[in-house]
Length: 538
Image (tube, rainbow, N blue to C red):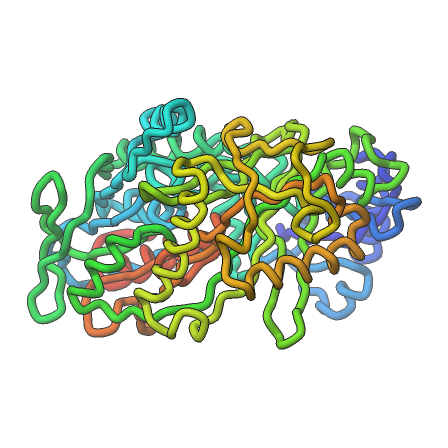
């Protein structure tokens, strides 16, 4: 039996699955008999809204076909048919004895998938996570919203599932690695909605992400792994570049391999490992704010007369612009029907991010509008990169002396008017706990100028994007890690034998899926080096 995908079946949105399957089969029957088709199912579904008066869905269908024959790939492709290459993560076990259990620092997507892979193959990982489990973490966030009392270890950045837990849960990624499908399959197996398996732009939503993280945690511990929540990593012990143990807030742990899956906001840990000789370099990131519109207005701009049709997903966008001089401005982490969340992890600073539940049923949409920050902007220094972010966060906090986020209407920001009240769009950050402010008191001029230029360009692409009533909330500073931990072909840190920097905090991922893939890749490298018996797939 072989599997084939019939691609690019473009049909009106009212076409049902029976019509989709019939169109796909017509193409497939060019090569196979009807009796050879064993099973069929939807593989991908996307939307083509380039013509607002003629919106279509674009489908791909996967078929199981009874055949041993090899067909010419070019001939198949001319008919929109491709053979499916099944994703796999075949484990090869090494022969070297591990001096202790593998220790993973961080239980975000990278740490989760690394731990899951190791646990399934009998390596009994230990995970250290500074924040709480899902229940504790949710309580910490709710307490912060009610009282303004921040838990610097358990918040929207830190805790079970990492920063991605309180997000829209997007699974789209720019990396081209077949293990992306494994990450999505695993999330589905662990309580994520069925449609992530076939949507072209899958998302999970915060409400489901909490269930996914808890389910993965249970599997890891059922297989002999351990997760130590509310436990801080302090330092590692090494002998001639080989990690032997890690010191934590709960004591010393013997270590056979150390995986640093820190996330992009672990600034204190970055400083600690630099002091211990881990090679770290600054990298470009971005900064800006989050823009909010009424979701219905985004839908109308994208879908025209089809807006509000229940068959269509909530309208979403990805926009970019190149400023004069080459600096980039782009939208990031667009959250249809979502809210702007308070994502700080340091007292005395304000950070924003976006979040949506699975249904995306809030009145507003929001997205980061961010400007590229290059090493020359902060002196090309590691600590300069972190200091650049921190100064913006503290400047925002200093405006009100509290966690009330600074806001401006887009009309005010663009100089059209100076508003004293909101109209149409109301800020969602901390239930409206905001203060009106001039962003030039928060950001360097190049960030303000970049946002200004970007808004005008985006308005030409999406009608109403720069509407005067839209709201900007600041700042968004944690778009990606400001540093990269250099590593070699074996994925170990330069100068260390068994230290594996991984995921977004190490500078090798950008989002849930790519971070999960990097965690899997690190686990595979560890297993192909250290001995175990048997073979296994994820």
